[in-house]
Length: 238
Image 1 (cartoon, one colour):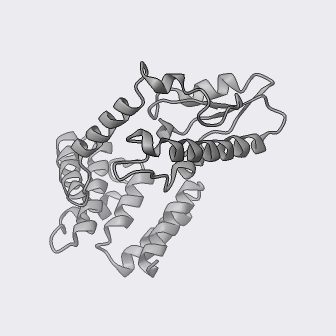
Image 2 (cartoon, one colour):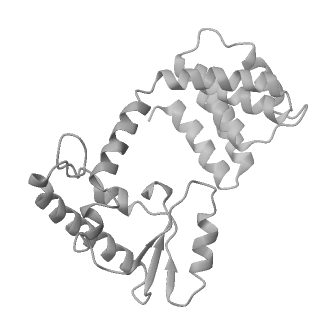
């Protein structure tokens, strides 16, 4: 990591740890090295609630006057930061214009296609049809009753659900883990995705799923060997 980015990242870490003064010391050092480094402004805005005339206002006002001749990444981060700055000061129209510009720059860096994702979801629905053969394949995968997966979008109440469940003496809550993500990593049994597109590759798929499911159940049990049920609530598990 370049020294400039290291200073800014260290400031962000100190801010997360509650060491606000120390974090701003790092940010000031970063901006002395490069006054146009957009990530530093982004980090400041993320961890600071702006009020009229506070110590950061003059810094951001100067930055807003110097939006030319920046790299695309610095430009994007600075627009995000200025969006937050104006939002805090209730300059909503100006702030929203910065957010729009920042998101346009961010979108230009992505190759994501909603159409490709929709096509894959459609294929998954066809293969794992609830009314078809998959609902009868009770032997596929790990057979343990130990794991309890709490599914839901972020901020939908998954933490509350886990807290309620883990109040029971036989239930242990692990929070958000990456076990499922690691289990399916590199699981690809055909060119169209990680699921079996036809019966010829079904046997390989079943073997892989059982092996990886066993590993997940074992890892969860290791968090609390006495628990009858172990919950996991990573939103992406769906």
